[in-house]
Amino acid sequence: MNNYIKDWFFVIKNCSVDNTYKMGWGKSIIECCNETPNEPNISFDRISLKMFKYYWNQTIFFDLQQSPNPINPPELYTYVKEVISSYQSDYGFKPVLFDKVEDKITIDIKNVLGTQNIKHLK
Image (cartoon, one colour):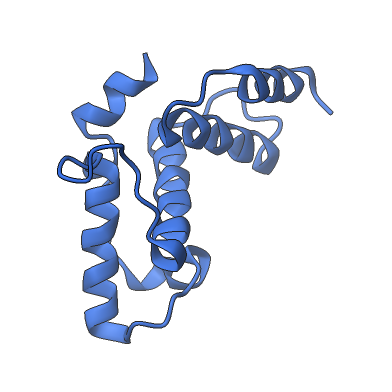
């Protein structure tokens, strides 16, 4: 395993995981590194698409609450729920993995990178 992936595993394993953003961004980066191990740069859009995928999968199957305050959920979670709702109105309510529906939905990366999401990266 490459050293940079070992370093990320250490960060993920030992960081304070008080929200799903930290874990999701770290997991997204590692997945991108595994897909293209010789690529020195990863676009933020590509990482963001992975984040959307993780939130899609956990939301469409489990609808897990993503905030201690259900009245003020994270922007990413709210956006993913909107896209899921749109998808379900067109294709039905059966939960489907993101990889199987990616070509049937439109994702605005700017909504994945909302200001609330960016501040959690700091």
